[in-house]
Length: 109
Length: 114
Image (tube, rainbow over all chains, first blue to last red; front, side, top):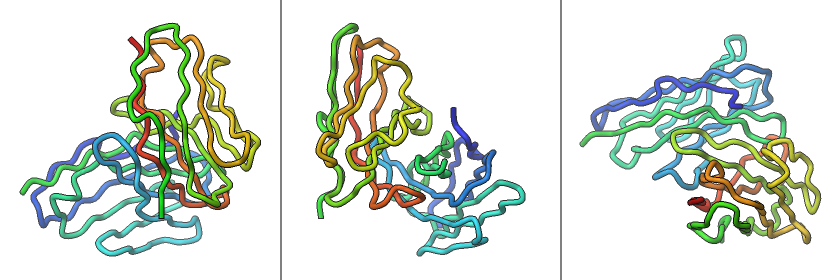
């Protein structure tokens, strides 16, 4: 069974716009990670945020974590066509990762 | 350096047959994971190795599924008497330590059971 839920399930925006994806989870965590997946194959790690952190940045990515609401968000600024992919949040349990169902992001030129 | 590799990239087999899927992790990574991903879903955990031993096999769906990592590096996921419901992408990942660490994923093996 999957712990998290991503919202929205699909998102389509114009190139240059910002994209925001949300993730909710059910149990206490040590950290939360975001991954990107192209073409339904291997996942690429984007960012890890620990339970005692509230916000983290990496390039055009900004992740927030609200442990009181058991939720996280991923913001991609100035989107590019290459950002088209599925994005997953994953929580530790504690060693294995528990993934949500993902958000399918499409960037239109 | 080399990432996680998985072979074969695609496998088509008939219902009832036996299959083996191989994972070659990043050198030096002690933790190795297997996940299964169905279309439109996120990856689901199958089994986790720390070194040679299976530290957590709670995700294996039934006793037709088995995995080994005899020398603490390469791992093989074995599926007996395959069923059509086993069709999915099987993903392998490795990490340096295991607990809460970033996982590096291979490209996956797409298994199709006809």
